[in-house]
Length: 65
Image: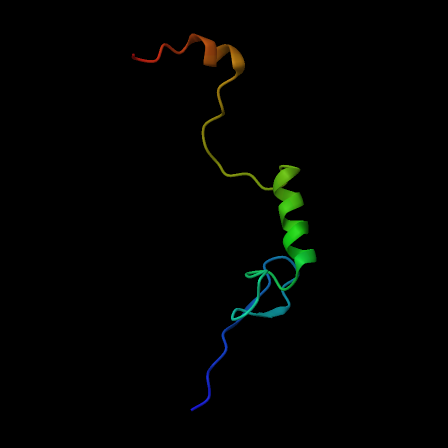
């Protein structure tokens, strides 16, 4: 019985990538993984939600003791 390998598409370049034994999964390579990481770091990707509090708002919050 042969072992089936799961193939996926790289989220960055869309090329087929192996899931099993791939240290960069779900990406096909370290290059695609780092390009995706850079996009997050540059804030090209954003998760919707309420705006983050400013420094002034952080000072106003009175946390219970």
